[in-house]
Length: 219
Image 1: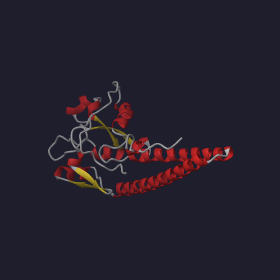
Image 2 (image 1 turned 45 degrees about the vertical axis):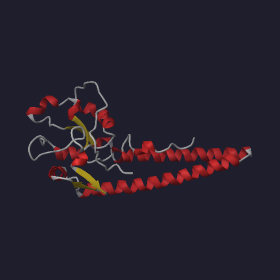
Image 3 (image 1 turned 60 degrees about the vertical axis):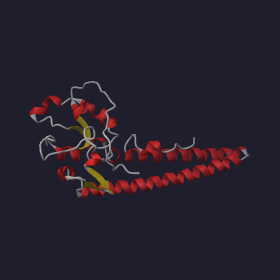
Image 4 (image 1 turned 90 degrees about the horizontal axis):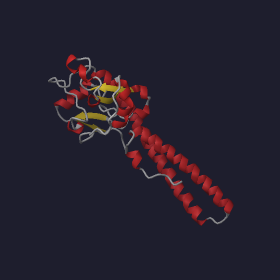
């Protein structure tokens, strides 16, 4: 399980938010639209704070030819502040300044993850990595921590699941009311613990991610 995977198919937008007077007001819709992850580096927003993410104008609003797109939803993307800052007012339509986005380009055609490193598949991908400094040291450190934490949470979730199954077996064989009551209490505690781990995974993998596909704990 990892949040660090570029999509190999185009993203079809599923949300149609009402018009807003400010681009920042689209943030929550964009967050859900793009599974709580930066569209450029795949960083999940659950590892930091929502203040570390914001609205990116793919075609920069600061360039006169794109000023009319400032509040157009199809030009807005969810991005971490680091990618947003480094992308700045680069014109992705300009020769040599190509930056892919998941709605118009299959991201995996240009870049892919090899562990915690982003590797390019062609010259456009190489420019993208260099322009947004996708492999700078701090990014690598954060990805490494997230990867280790996910592995620890998955292990804890597996152990909790094993305990739940053991308690359920004991419960099915228990006849004494007092014993059954104690086992039911333990089962609820382990169920709550399992749900906590699932929520942690969801934050780390991105909402609408693999964590949502995990089987729910027994009540």
